[in-house]
Image 1 (tube, rainbow, N blue to C red):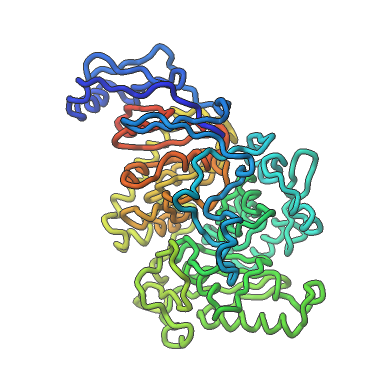
Image 2 (spheres, rainbow, N blue to C red):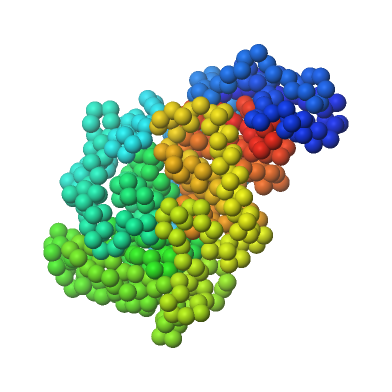
Length: 589
């Protein structure tokens, strides 16, 4: 998955460097209604501007090459930095083809197994960090385009048969020649995910737009999330990295949102009040243990009025206790303990029908505060903090309300209106420096920018070319919002060093994402994303060891990596555009 090497660097004449930066921008704005290209892609390099600073030199070849270039000799990629000699990153050994630095199976064995702490993020430091490019497995091919990818994937891309054996009777996945097939089955939905979701839809409103964001804990191959997409519901699926099953890897190969994750000792990397619905289908999470700590964490990330869905043990234990190889007494005690934790959180049990049970979180804590004894309400004021923050056996208080009928934190519009409506966190002044007017302007600005991207990158118009998209510095989610009508999904990342915590706003828009420190590895597999967008990321991390190896590791073969920036660093290969709205680089991986 190497990056096409650049033979030359971008050169700016001394005269141009001395002139004020507003002159070329003003001149271009007067002469053009669309962007002009200053640099021209030519054998991996650039032409140097010549003449006066206000003139633009255009090379004779007008077409830009955005196609895949991953046949560099030995996988070597030169990495340039301003004023420094070129370094070369070679390919890692083949054993690292599925390397996930912060969930490395070998390193995890150093940590406690109690409560699965060893499966949490444990990132390498110093000399443990790889200085090479993660290779693709032998026989790797570009994934099937969406929507075909929901049901089929190349075996060579994720060469693991374990799940086809272990889950054979449950219809999760099967091998068909050189392909995997995903029939849509699951442990608790033998008739398929569609039928299972229809059963859930008989208990809660899945079709009126009131439920948009969902959390799938212990997702398997993410068939639940995959089939929710046709109902305009966007699920964040997670499962731990284990030694062989590669559940999240299968989900991403299918074109379904997912991250590596586990409920252990740290909070989930999402803000408070993020999801309209959370789901566990035989996810094997001990909800009744540790003083209900894991249900308390689900309560934190559930929106007021949100639903928690549980199927599998211990639900309907009277029917399944023999097959589960557990006693009636044990299963009954577990269910009673879960019911008690739910009541302590002021949840209301909506219904238990067959294999499915549903609880609902209250719209506010007005009545709950008077009756709650345990768990206590948390005293700290950072409900959204979720980057290595420990879970606590206390309940995250909802924002105050003036009467018992009010939705804490503000009611959301139904989807799709909520995408462009001013999010409550902004209208209520929770995001410092961001007003309703600024939000509307940001939304419109990103519409213009995305139109420009599509004018420059013709692959956007190729059906199925892009599916998995990563925004490394999502801000208010404007980039993802502008792509909502395209057949893509966007993982919106908010860096932990960002000036304001906007991830809650992103979720209030009906989008999904996570916190991330880009000095560390992301909780995902190599070759996850078709397009990586990076707005001001290098500026944000200018005093840190962050570099473009992050993008190279996460991209699929032949994908685009974009960055909006104020000052162009020497990262190669790149494309520089003098569009008044946007200056971008594009790295071809």
